[in-house]
Length: 243
Image (tube, rainbow, N blue to C red; front, side, top):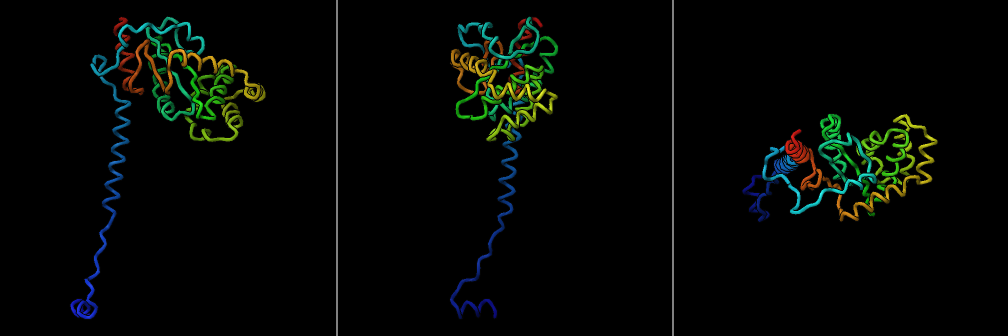
């Protein structure tokens, strides 16, 4: 039946052609990808060390009380001209992202003797596995593998963050690192380092640090923790110190 005859007989308009949604889907995908790329660039691109956009110490800011460093875990030369301190939660996604920057910091500046890095545990109450993770790193530290476990916890964050048996998972990580299993598991089950983690958290409360990650370069608080701003501020402080 011809279209004209069909319309005369039925009075119905011709069927509408449904437009393809494929271009819309492609467009949305492109926008999402662009946002991810821009976000990664925003965090990793290094501004010039002389940039006015870099954070500075607050007016009349006092030096960080170095005596509190004993409650964190340090790596690097005691006389390093710059000290970077991080208050973090192993289950915090943003801390997981910053862990890549801290790895690079240790490789490029700590190993060169220019920076000392201090990690403070600040397990947040809403993260059920953050406290056990902090203890796992310290238990591994008893066997000389603190930073290896530290990195493994962040690299595998998505695997254990909702686990109902984090100790079993962390013990497996310890085995992978060559730790003595009975000693590690005993450390975890007896909560040998509970007080040490609590003491670190009290330092954060004393300093009114409530969010993670909070990153300080000497007494300068980063406004967007990531390699870009971190490296630029570190380089500026090294230049100021004549290093």
